[in-house]
Amino acid sequence: MIRGTGALLDPPGDYRPSAEIVGAGAPPPAHDGVLRWCPPVSDQGGDNSCVAFAFAAALYARAGAEGRPQVMASRKALWYFARAIAGRQALNAGVAPTDMFQVAANAVGYPPEWAWSLAMPLTLQPDEHAMRFAADQRDVAVGRIVGEGLVRKYELQAALAARFPVPFTIASDDGYAEQTTGIWSPRGSWRGYHEVLATHYTRDGVWTQGSYGFGHGVAGFTLIPWEIVMDGSMVLDLWAVTFAPAPPAEGA
Image (cartoon, rainbow, N blue to C red):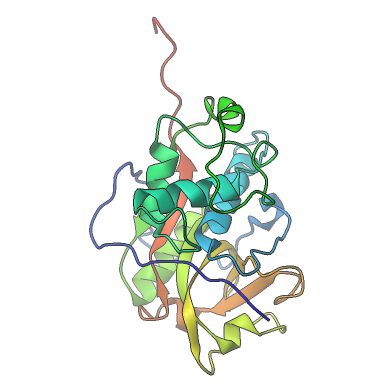
């Protein structure tokens, strides 16, 4: 079975726009759920578009957490624009999460999926009609989760407890790509860097929504044990996602 990946590693250091949305001086509650706000499970197929899938799912989940209408951002459009930053829009190429954030921060915005669907060719730039519906997109803010070991665990828990969905990158292997039990047990060959969305956590680990369809993991969700999450070589580039505050009303 052909399974695309498509995450490139982010450069170190700060990224703007960012938000102070994570941090825990003590362990958060033992478990937390944001699962009910996630979009339906979908499948990226052989496209290397996992970053677009995870980021769009994060926006969808965060809108639900805020009690706002949940509209799926066009994953094909997000992926196209992020590839275009590196001049790779004609290729089935991966992107870095920070390139995806630049797309979201662009004043042009991104269209909803009903205006530019997953069926569109990957090399086709979203047209003027689709982009007309992008003008009212809200600015996105992100906060990098830093550190390793227990610091990383607590930061991730704090973000999820505050209802901030967290896309992150994993060093995917045969154990992840082919698993159907719902718990990632690393084994076999490395498949590439893959982006997933952390949705909620338990005492055993963090549950993630992938983009390999309903038959992957448990109905499309996979538990990544804490010992893997805390390993800086296997879980990388964690970002908590929210929306920037709305600008003040004119004359306020």
